[in-house]
Image (cartoon, rainbow, N blue to C red):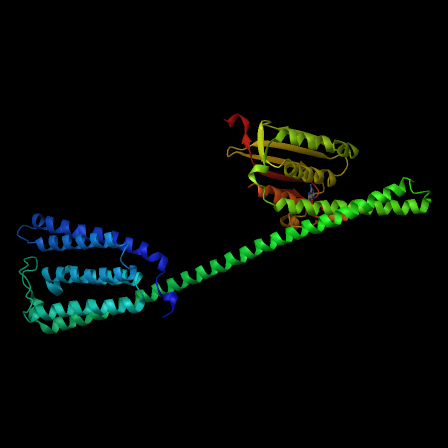
Length: 448
Ligand code: ADP
C-alpha cells in the first residue's frame, strides 16, 4: 500500500481525540434522548437508549484514559467495532431495520474513512454489513426477537421478507458505495497532503543550502577582501611616497601616470571596503557586542561629515527628526553605514542646486522610520525592484556617473534586515527618490 494513502502518523493522536470528542456528543445525546423520550412521548419506553448511551460514554472514557498506552491504529479500530456493536444494539432495540438510528451507520462509515486506510475502511464496512444483516436475519427468524417498541407499533416489514431483502441489498450497496466514494476523496486529499509535505521538505532543504552557500560566499568575500586590501593599501602608500618626491625626482609624465594609478587604487580600495561591508552586513551580531546608540547623534555626525560634499554641489538639506531621544541597540558602524550610503547616494544622484530631506518619525510599534528623499535623477520604474540587488546599477545612473559599484544599497538592505528592519524605495524618474528605513528602536522615555 502506498504510504501516501495512510493517514499521517503524526495526525493520528489528534484524530483520535477528535473522534472521542465527537462521541461524547453522540453518547450524551443518546442518554438525554433516552431520558426525555418517555416524557416527550408518554408510554414510550426509551430506556434502552439511555443504557446504550451510558455504555458508549463508558467505553469512550476508557479509550480516553488508555490513549497514552494503546496503539493509535488499534485504538481506532476497536472504537469503530464497539460503535458498530452499540449502533446494532440500538437499532435492534428501536425497531430493527425500521429504526431511525440505522442511518447513523452511513455517517459512521464516512467518519471511518477519514480515520483509517481505504482497505481497513472496506473491512470495517463489511463488518457493519454483517452486523446489520445478521441482526435482521436473527430478528426475522425469531432467534433475537425484536422487543416491543411502541414507537413503531406494527413491524410490517418483518412480515415481508422480500422487502427485507431489498432493504438489506440497498443498505449494503449504499454502505459500500459511500465507502468507495469517501475513501476515494480522502485518498486524494491524503496524497495531496503528502505531496505538499514532500514539497515543504524539499523547500526547507533548498533554503538551508542557500543559507549555507550565502554564508560560504560571505566568508570567501571577507577573506579575499582582507587579503587583497593589505597589499593594495601598502602599494598605494608607496606610490604616494614616490609622488611626494621622497624617492627622488619624478618627471611630470610619470607623476601624471602615478597619480592615475593612485586614483584607480583608491577606487579599488573603496570597492574592497564595500565588499567587506557587504559581508559584515550579513554577519549576525552577538548580543554582547551591541551598544545603545542615540540615533539622533549618529545622524547628525554623518550629516556633518557630508556637509562639505553637499556644499560643493550647492545642495540644500533639511532635517526633521521628531523624536531625538530614540535608541538603537546594535553596532554604531552598522547604523552609520546605513545613513552614509543613503545620504551618499542622495548627494551623488542629485544634480547641483537640488534638495535633500532627512525625516525621522517614531512609529507606534517602536519602529523608527527614516526617510531620505532627494530631488535627483530618480530610478526608471522597471528597474526599481532591482536596486537592492548586489552590483545592480540603474541605466540612467550608469550614464550619468561612470563610477559606482552597485553594492551600497544591498549593504543597506542586509544591514537593516539583520536588525529585523526593512527598507523601501519610491522614485519618479527625473523628479527624485525617497528611501525609507524602518528600524526597531527603544524610545528613551519608555525605558525603565
Ligand atoms: P552605486 O551608487 O554604487 O551605483 P548603490 O547600491 O548605492 O550603488 O545603488 C544602486 C543603484 O540604485 C544606483 O546605481 C542607482 O541606479 C540607484 N540609486 C540609488 N540611490 C539613488 C538615488 N538617491 N537616486 C537615484 N538613483 C539611486
